[in-house]
Amino acid sequence: MLHVVHHADYMAPRPERGSFRFDKYYLVMEELRASGAPLTEHAPEPMPREWLEAVHCPDYVDQVFRAEVPRDKERRIGFPVTPAITSRVRHTNGGTWLAAKLAMLHGYAANSAAGSHHALHDTGAGYCVFNDLAVASNRLIAEGDARRILIVDCDVHQGDGTASLTAGRTDIFTLSLHAEKNFPVRKARSTRDVGLPDGVDDDGYMAALTRHLPEVMADFAPDFVLYQAGVDPHAHDKLGRLALTDAGLALRERFVVSEARRRGLAIASALGGGYGDDQRAVAARHAASMLAMADENARAARPA
Image 1 (spheres, rainbow, N blue to C red):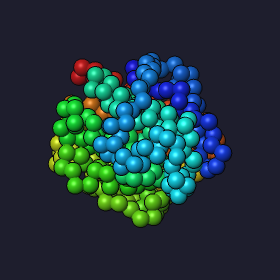
Image 2 (cartoon, rainbow, N blue to C red):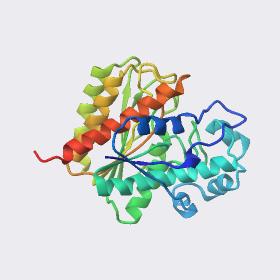
Image 3 (cartoon, rainbow, N blue to C red):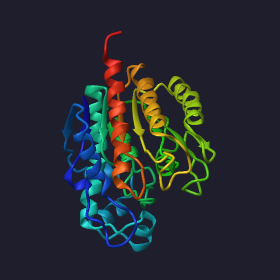
Image 4 (tube, one colour):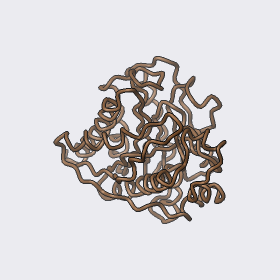
């Protein structure tokens, strides 16, 4: 069973400025529903303002809530922040928190959006408005749902915002596997960064992942895992520089979930990046990613 968080507001109207397209968010759900796999959909509540202000600058949060974000910040984000976008990002952030809560009940759950790892303290960036990974982690720890959270970021772009927002915290560990020469040009410092050269294929990627992830889990000893499961390391991604195949992405997802579940850890995923002119193909990669993780979670739950 895949427990997936989704809301109609994830599909915001296409903004009049900027190149970001929101088409894939409803296409992902179409792919999941058509897959025939057992599926339960959950709708999130909009994230409360005070949860966002615990991580982001209150003045910036206010700008987003009023849909009056300065143009220089909108340029960094990549699209204008309209009232529809305000509702969207409140729901996508609430979605990652809800996915985490569901994962604690079911072992694994997915948010069908978010993974907004470029958003910084007082501004958004790189198509990200609020950083759901940092906000959800902070809230889960504040409420006593977790003590030590590992954020695994396998998007092709470094999770610079997440790294910056959690820097210095001993209860949150950020592991980022990314294309070293890709956006952002100026990287932040994650707890552990694994920068990969252009063109890394399935074997090279899995060699890095299987080396670093078990070691981090053993050393940090998290009690919960948040996973940014971007599919933009795919060879056909428009903004990627790596060369993973469909099979390689599935192998990645199964390994991340299996490493968590064999230690008895719940894991929640956020959608992350995935770009291309064929939005249906991108959505299919995201859907396959979530289904592979749900299948691995089910396998881990079966008696030996």
